[in-house]
Length: 331
Ligand SMILES: Nc1nc2c(ncn2[C@@H]2O[C@H](COP(=O)(O)OP(=O)(O)OP(=O)(O)O)[C@@H](O)[C@H]2O)c(=O)[nH]1
Ligand SMILES: [Mg+2]
Image (cartoon, rainbow, N blue to C red):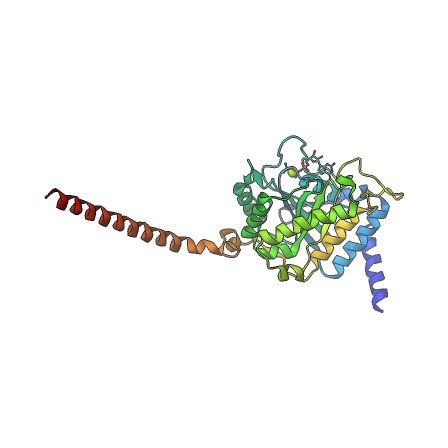
């Protein structure tokens, strides 16, 4: 069988396994109950076909499970993106306040393939990075392996600021720089009319470049290292009012059917030869991540103490000298 035939054979075998009348609704994996991916049937047939081909490719690469972590600031569309990807309303979306207080993992299975998506609370609290949220996320991820990170922000925000950089820094400090090799930049609210009559693609790439630069600076990556791999950018429109093409697929203003494009980008990252992020005790405690700087803290504190002592001694000497001089003047 030549390569082309082998690929067609694998895809058709996989298609048969994916037929909708799979007998059972739930599968037991140890104590974890994993549901059949019912939301898959909600996608239009054109999208389903593209996704089946992508899942078949993953299977060829022996990837039977994919665990996707979704992180970003509050209210940027993390949960909505999870719901769009699964094709069901599985996590709560809230318009008026930050909703998720703790991480939630949603698992779905189809034809022997398991998709785990972890939705997380927003990483900002009262204008600062929420280290409490990060701690919660790290605790939740203990003993899990992250295949792909979706770092979510909005396409229709026009600025990047220091807070964005601090968030990237905090993620890098928690999970190590390598997490960015397994990442996608996901930009929601992508059905927009760019300001100042800018062309849609020009506007999107300007916004993407600004955020990618922030990731590079926040993760303290050298320009060269950053150029050696690219963080794919995926545009997403979660709104129910998203435009559709003639095949009923949700499309962006540039005509791209974004759900299959996002799954394709996820598939590429999952098979990009970099290592998945294993969240073990060492990483959680900081020694395995980029928090190695913490080891310097006792030495720095010691040096500070020495400095204070030296200044104290100098002041006392000065006072003593002053008092003797005053005494000499009195006599
Ligand atoms: N128009 C539009 N609205 C969106 C999109 N994504 C999310 N929203 C809306 O933005 C609001 C916040 O969405 P969520 O998905 O709850 O955002 P989140 O990042 O999960 O928020 P937290 O869990 O609070 O951190 C909701 O009103 C969503 O309907 C999008 O792509 N387009
Ligand atoms: Mg949410």
